[in-house]
Length: 260
Image 1 (cartoon, rainbow, N blue to C red):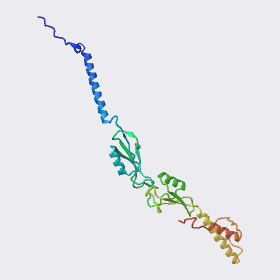
Image 2 (image 1 turned 120 degrees about the vertical axis):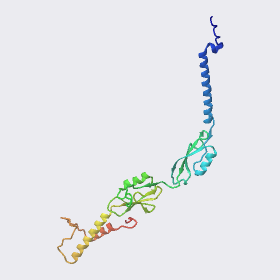
Image 3 (image 1 turned 135 degrees about the horizontal axis):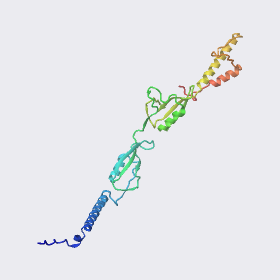
Image 4 (image 1 turned 45 degrees about the horizontal axis):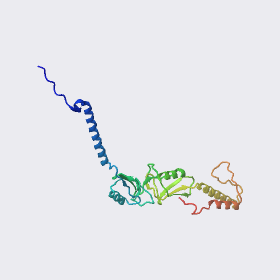
């Protein structure tokens, strides 16, 4: 006996099942996107803005309080040191004051350090020796400038070559490997190269005095000792000119040279 055909689904869904499934999938996807959009809008506070308050040149604690009261987060990005700003005060902020940002945004602060930065002037591992000793003045001053020192003064001291004798920070000699604050007052003592000239002048004066003594004793034939230099023939100027020249060469005042 022949079976009766089963009842076929009626309506649009029964006649077009594939199209119906596609429509359902699109509707579910649209609903999901709608939910995600509103969730992101709530999380990112879409459409809401706040203005960043001004906290530069304020103390660290006051700046933190102001920003927290306005609902902002705070991050200390770095600590610097400036002589013209009080320690513990805000040097710079980012974003800048007056910027329009999202509520609760993180504000980065740059704080003036309580203590100045300390650096090693001479990192040669001989801590008992003076820093930058025997350096040329040019290389020594370049080193100090590179490290950030601003208050640097060069003082000439009596010596026989043009090099650094010692470095003083706030009046105290600096040793190798020693840390020094960058705001210290630096004095660089440099040999002036005149010691050899003065020594030669004094030696010439002594030779002239020896010759004068020998002449006064009636000596007519003598060989003064000129340091053993073979074939050396001195040029004897008149007594008055020699005395005057020697006086000019050896006159050194305390104001001109600091003796080391």
